Image (cartoon, rainbow, N blue to C red; front, side):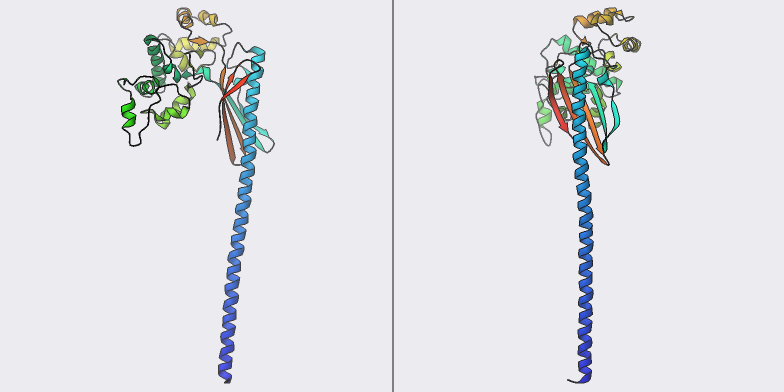
Amino acid sequence: MHPLRSLQHRQDESGLALLMTVATVAVLTILIFQFNTLTRMTAQETAYFRDSAQATYLAKAGAVAGQAVLSLDAKIDGKIDGLNDKWAQPISSFPLREGVLSVLITDERGKFNLNNFARVVDSDTQDEHKRQLRSLFQRLEENPNLVDSIIDWIDGDDAKRPFGAETSFYQSLPEPYWPKNGTIQNFQDVYLIKGMTHDIVEKLRPYITIYPHSADGKININTAHPWILEGLHPQMTPSLVSRVVQARPFKNPLDVERVGGMKRIAQALRLKQVYQIHSEIFSVMSDGRVNETTKVVQAIVNREGSNAMTLLMYRIE
């Protein structure tokens, strides 16, 4: 072979070898980078799953602890429930092992029960429930006419109220569905009611409940928010409500009559069995947080005496 050709051939081979070496190094670099990224991602995912599991256990433990506090309270003084009780004192960001725990217990009997409208009662009682809920809407600066839609959603007939909606409206929607026309079993139903936007429902949520499902119209006067108390009677002025709140907790239903200006009103409410001084339905909200991961357990419990606790709802988020 000619010397020049031989030299060029060797140069070509060297260039090809160099190119192959560069390509190999490039591929190896990419593989190493991908492996490193995958390793980091796997480590992050492992950490997330670890934190998620620990946060879940924390939240579950908080829910169990909340039920234990309620059970103990029933043994100590189960005939009275007020906002000074141990169960009513929230636990906020309590350090526990590698995370923090928060627990909040609220009395569902201190709220307005939407399932009052599912009860078969006389028209006067139904009108009273309507007036109470309209009063709450006004306090929240929301349109009280929305109460008609709530009643139509729950009551058993298909007769539309002036500002309400019945089957014909819900079936005419692009994605039609049926009104409940009965007891609300799941709070998510409230979001389906005509006019009830997410913001309105969230505004209402601290003051309304669907428990117990078999509503009896009673509220716990020892724990109810002043706005709920204000709606109990047309003559419940803010000043009267303030006196009632200051006199709590009541240890006997008759004690309400001794509040200045409340005798006649309290007698009327007691005869209609509108209020009581104890509770059996509670919400336990437990929040477990580990690093940046948070898990929430919400439980609705029926405290049937000091030794019995029935779960009505349990959800992990």
